[in-house]
Image 1: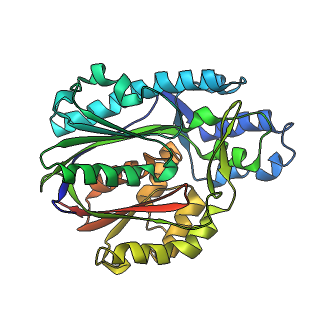
Image 2 (image 1 turned 180 degrees about the vertical axis):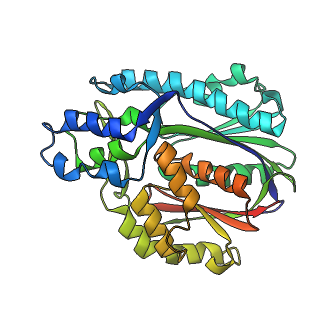
Length: 349
């Protein structure tokens, strides 16, 4: 990427309500046992996800009552704006900047609809300038952390000197549904949590890492693998194909192609920083990239502590990796609706 773009700061934040996995499993059993005949056969998914606890925008009791679009989006707007402000402020503090010094804000979120968008609703609280550019992005799903970082870096490179704030925020739990549950709904109940991550970028050599490049690969004919269905009651999750075997079989050729476009190969990557969609996805990534079983340790830790938070999750992994000490070259990667693999190549400062 020319000019080079520095990652100046990185922060994470969670909503206040803790959801221990054992409690979620018990509640799910009470809710779904009579509604979904196959629940008992699927119940072990709550143990095999590798999740110990998650965080949610609302207390558990809120999810036990029927909810429609107005209630879900009211909860999204209220909780998301608060979480946006907290995580953005943490990223600004680490960068030793104020909101007034940010020139452009990229907001990535696919779990709620807010117009005006989140950064507009937080502008006065954050002290953003009236002339700050806003780029809200919807629809990236679990790939949003990597794709959002790539987009923010491209925007920073296009305007040297500009300070770009990226916020990736998802409240996945608000999509929880009790009506006409499917296998995908049970898996989502076992996997998804809420969270946010933010970082500041600026063209130049400073920061704890520099963005060297970025690439994406979208497989033809895969629109149905992952996404949302839009129903009268709210968003419903779509998992039409098993993602772990898809990743195990088809990620490596795509990764080879994406890296080749940057003059690199897998063997030149010191550390892959991956979105942990679930334990089986993590194992599939290790297999596809020839990393060795257990290599994606930070991924497993984030999954255990927070669940799959969609877009911000890979940035949580990057935060743990940088605190442990980033190697010379890392590649962030995440899979999301499309079906798309997104990568960002980073060099340590």
